Length: 322
Image 1: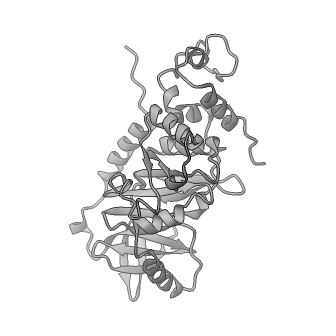
Image 2: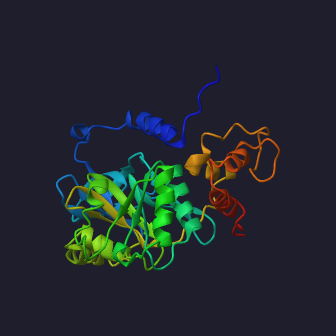
Image 3: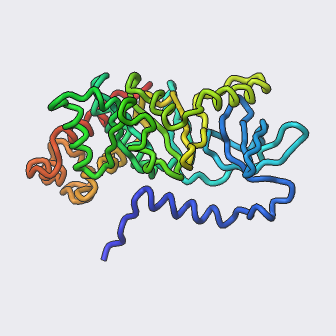
């Protein structure tokens, strides 16, 4: 019998388990402490310890990168601190920068909320890019229809959301009028770390404000803490949710390209493709025109939509940065 191929998420969990065997329990840290990165700015980071106390910390030179959500070991030093090491990341959300270099955006995220609305009109290929990124990173993806009070009869957004729900993605609706506290999505966020992504104008900021009613106060406190270091913060910032869990706000992922992923990983990110991958006649099948392509056969039989196959092609054929 052939050995079963592990999914990306299963492989990542195994690696994380192995790495964590080498970490010290908090009681054996000496004067060092466990903490979570709230925000990164320059060569410093704002770290919160297990007692909720926050302190600016400098990073050891051997730490390659830190982002909001990273778990770290740090040591107090006068009024600041020193980050000694970064814990193994459970998940990491990354994106290419303007030079095409892959950069982490947020760490240890459990749920990606992909926010759409009746206006601006949803861009389904952008939605698919987010969903592929979530699958590749080992995160649960949830589609959130915001501004649901603007939905009209036979609205295309309703059909779009139903199509993703049929694929197995959780779908929630919310609006500021009938759902002022975002109760529709709170259970999906409870005790987990989430990130919101979506086009500009879909209402992510208002949704965040409904999830965190005192957000303005928290932003002020965070800005004041960072200002003491006279540095400019990067985009991602972590906030605690009143219902439990965390939210990482990162405006830097409003657009999302997948130039860094090989075609086979993109294909795996289309969850309805997964049962057919590895069943094509040719090992290097591009799922385009090849004879014996299992994906093309599934499309012909109505098991995969032609629109999703075209979306896959748009992603893998997109021009890559020089």
